[in-house]
Image (cartoon, rainbow, N blue to C red; front, side, top):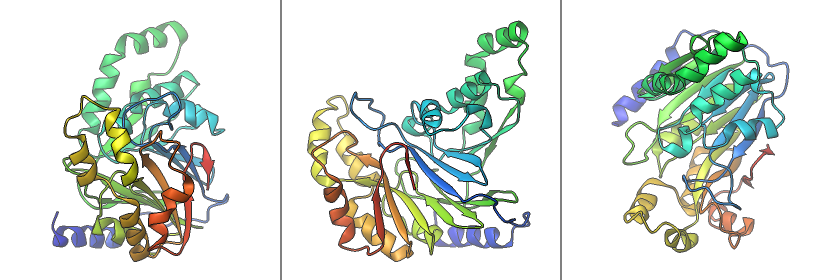
Length: 307
């Protein structure tokens, strides 16, 4: 992505004709549903990536890692309140339970529309998931008198920087970040009446993320601890080039500190931690590299933590 295309996206965001933000009647909340990076599921590891932004008591789910529906309930939210889903990119640890989350809401009594946003092929994925589960869905419609789930869900695709959605409570903007080999990986910024929250998705050092996060109250960003990589790599013997991917596509703690400082955010929340299941890496070790460069508040994320 060129600097010109990024700036044109920012300009489009500034000039977009969208409804004005109202005054949020309830404080905006941030809940970390899953804070572990990568697709491996381990007995003592963190839940897979998912973050919840709650604006005026309405939940906005960002990413749908394995088990997101259970984490949603554990965080104290009713599944039939599901309204908005955002996918940062199409690695399986971020989208594997997208369809399952929607289905869990339907099983819990969902009768209202759900809108999902993300890069291609989100529409095709949605259709494929419905086809995969067509027998069950149609059986339950006929046997249990349920509304047709397929008519409740609308998938919205985008492939450039700029506005994603806006209603009277919140404006959501996106910027493409650098996460090779994935071409379309995006960070999201939520601007509500009382605070702004940026969620990085997966990224290495990205000037685009710095621009999106400028002056935000909270930056929720992935983090990789270099010293823990060797132990992690020993646990995945069938991924010969995993080391190269991790180093090229994710952000180290020291680089994260520099990015947060350049963006001028007030609070940095570390999530999508890699390694996600190494108890020898303490919170102090996670923040050590960040603190060398960033003077704001630092939070080492844990599952179901509310900020």
